[in-house]
Amino acid sequence: MSPEEEKLDEIRKRIDEIDAAIVDLLSKRMAYAKQVKDVKVRMNRHIKDGRREEMVIENWCEHARRNRRGGEYDLSEEMMKKMATLIIEYTVKNELIVNNSDISV
View (tube, one colour):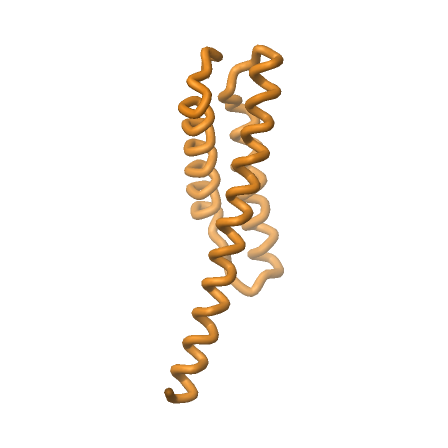
């Protein structure tokens, strides 16, 4: 294997490690979201909270802006918004399906 191929393998290994960490963090996020849902059910609140969702999306965009000012890679706000929206949509859908909740969305 050439030195360049070894370098490529090493970089890909690091990406794989980051991907695994992202999966672990998403799993933890889902567990916390379930706790939030359980509390909302006990409080007789709606599962879906548009204001909170907007805050989360804005937080992701703010992280992108901060990264742009000092980071090694320019994360676009558009990408962060899409990712946050996807995660939120999946989380809410999962919460509604898992518990077949009677609480309105």
